[in-house]
Length: 195
Image 1 (cartoon, rainbow, N blue to C red):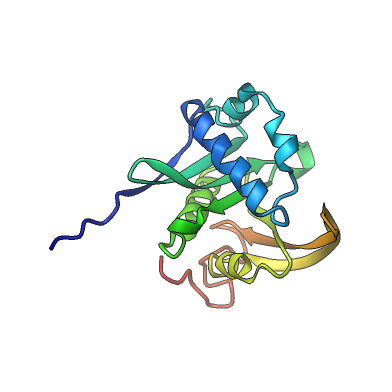
Image 2 (cartoon, rainbow, N blue to C red):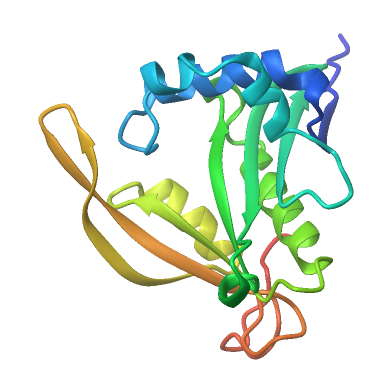
């Protein structure tokens, strides 16, 4: 009996992916309200043009989104947005990371984060990538730490959720060619495991 392995690929999303991107994100907002600053109602109300514009592929884009596809179906996403303000153009923020439950454990999260870091390293103005992760989400924080992100603080009451608030751990990762860069020996001699 032969078992075929699923065809898995990581690629940058385009406006043609807007419908499936929107569907995956709305499901994530519903399933993990503690993980996202946006709510289902807030994002569901946005026109499809907003979703398509987020995936624009113009040369001067300052926001990018990658998808993980399994046998052609979108099963995970992550985004990167570069700051546009003059004094903050050296920073970018990783956002909207999700991998569907049925596809976890296949290193898709690691591959998505690596796609972000690889792209960020190619942007001449960028020196570091930041992100926030819900305090207590040990699996996500562990993934980010394995990829070279380091925590630098906790924001109390960062997101209002039903019944209270959740804190966010702020993390950062300097890009290659800069002091302490992810995967470089300046990071305590630790490389990027499994890459």
